[in-house]
Amino acid sequence: MWAAGQANPTTLPGPGLLGLGNTNCIALDAAPGNATTPAILGVCPDGAGHPTPVVWTPTGLLGAYVASVPGPPANSVSCAASQINATGQILGTCDFGSGIGTKTVRWPSANGAAVVLSSVAGSPRSVGVEMNASGAIVGQYLSAGDVSLPFYWNPDANVVQAIPALASGAAAAVSGISDTGVVMGDSEIDAGTSHAFKWTAASGVTDLGTLAGGNNSSVSMTSNNGCFATGNSEVAGHANHAFADSLCVPSSAERAISTLASLQFPGIGAKYFNYINGYIEHVLALVKCPKRNDPVCETGRSLKSSATFS
Image (cartoon, rainbow, N blue to C red; front, side, top):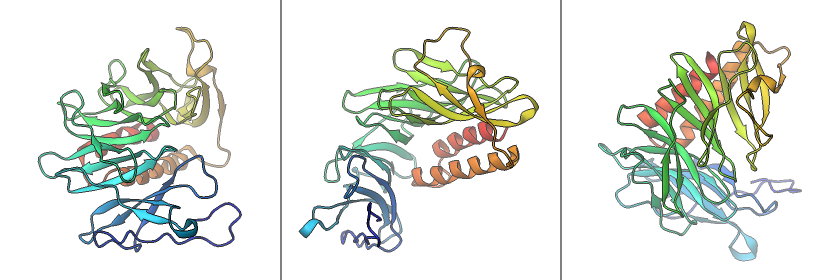
């Protein structure tokens, strides 16, 4: 770990539990709010090579970092964690083996018992994608028709909501959730075409459309306050432009993404720009899915690829 103003990195110790060491460990996230000694979340392989979440906190002698292993849920085979927030809550996905598959989990802290999302719309399989500052989570679940669709989960309020695709679409994928509960993602609207969308518990799903002349759009990032989103959209001629959307301005039925400021990447063809986006999505998906070839992960990844590569 490189701290602010520190010339040399600090080597994080191995947990020393379950046969774990610090070899082949990967740091994935740092808890916000502490610029000098934040809690660090990562994954280390156990003795059988399975991924195991690890949290490093500066609670040792003289502020030294100490590793803790969040306890796995009962009957799980392996778990992978992907995010830690300022209060120490941890987002992860655990594999429960053949016939059950992956489930989204949230640990209240490094030493707390995991809460498991049992099902979404009757489906037991899910993958967590992002968690906000209050611990609300969005992710993907596998529907009864084997289609990957988004969900919203608030473990503290015991609220689970399935997020539908846009009208005429079959599949959809979330990219993130703001601290105010605004969810952003991409959805099919017909075969081979997808649009960026916004979802809130109060308003449901809103189609953000495309820049003028384009058929596809995709959102990549949402601000913490839920008022701004960025992504890319096709324009006439199938070129891709970046966009920034001000979501908190007064809107009407006529408001569309065509009113947004756009920025083309000079010197980078649309083909290679899309390859970069696709590679980033692929790497993030591998981190979030503890089990390769899992349908929930793979179908969600396919939608993001179609939205980006079209």
